[in-house]
Image (cartoon, rainbow, N blue to C red; front, side, top):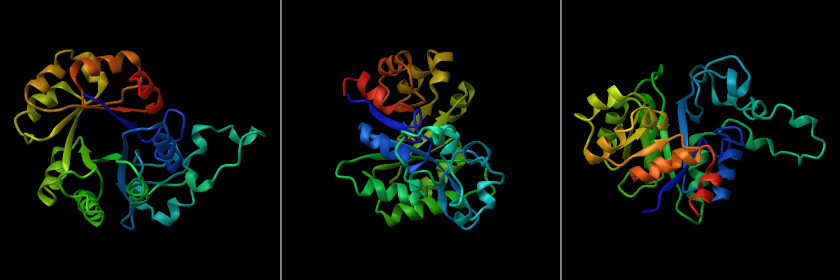
Length: 259
């Protein structure tokens, strides 16, 4: 079995998360897949941003949901990762387009233009002021690419069971991943998730609950595990037969897998 290596927010250990630069670095490393979080802007664009506010990654005030895409485009989403870069006289000049807010459409276009199959795991963030509109816009976009059918390179993830139900109703062909960060949630979810749904426990949860992984696989569900960055955690995932590991360090994990 080949374990899929998915770049968490791009190659985000060394690059600013969710920037085009981080995703291009992940692709260059040979990552099998890319992971992103999406939020909806005030003017209806899906953008790849994890936090609801902009303080951490853009060093700015404001909420993603209350700003237009044009306003977000004015912000620098990369300097926070390496704030001293401007002092390095020998560093190559950066292409600023690699450091701006990244729309989901741009990310999907980048993947569509590749000469190899790369999968995309898209997480919808909840709660949000826009509720189910996020999933509606997402499904509409996937239909634009013809990626709303079985065999699509795209899967949708969420901690929200309700959000995944929305996707399933709108586009039954899209693969779904139910994210889990607490053991007691599995006790409830195991009774309601669809038989073809993938479970996405965090690696910290699998460390705390050593038998949880076996219980999930015994129930007939594949696992995609986040965020796997160390040899020890990778080894645990391989022992459990995990189908995909989501990592900040795709190049390192690929090397450890002998790829």
